[in-house]
Length: 246
Image 1 (cartoon, rainbow, N blue to C red):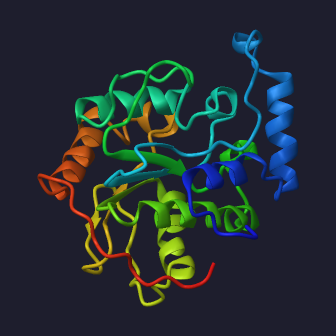
Image 2 (image 1 turned 180 degrees about the vertical axis):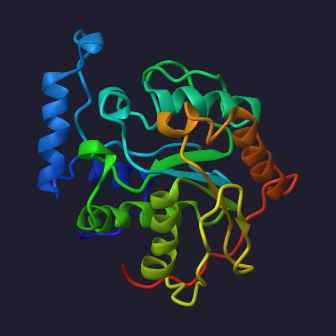
């Protein structure tokens, strides 16, 4: 990013017009053009997908990237695919989502005290972004963290790539160069610095994990109970941490 956005509107405008990764631009547009037969009547989003939710959230949820026929179709993270079908019922049970379903951008879903985003904003082929694509997209995640910092208390990363991505943001974009290595493990909780949020790790709610039993509803519910327990009973602001230039 040439300029660090200072508002949600400016950030979303930058995300929506991004064409930094030629491979991802080509793929997201090809998927939107070819479509899946079940969604042939849809007008696919086919663009970068911005984060969404409460702009004063205390909880930030970070995923990997939009799904080819999920968020790349609907334009909203974890919406319209199997991962969202597993995620939003859990968030509804935990009191973070207004409803247990997420089918399209105008379905009435709202998030309470939570903002959902991803490490990469465009759908990657085979759900595998390259290291260069992740690096190009991380400034958007850093901008979201900056905007949320006055209220942010917990970061929940879904999957190893999201985990490594958010820690890299804090180290390389936000000035926490001495942040220790925090190993990824499902259900792990770390409080590495008093001026940082707590970091919570979870397996990604992908079909590969949920249909094999690696991630069960009970396991996922336990993660969100952990997140809820880390929040004070009433929102409190915290001074912004020192930040390095982007």
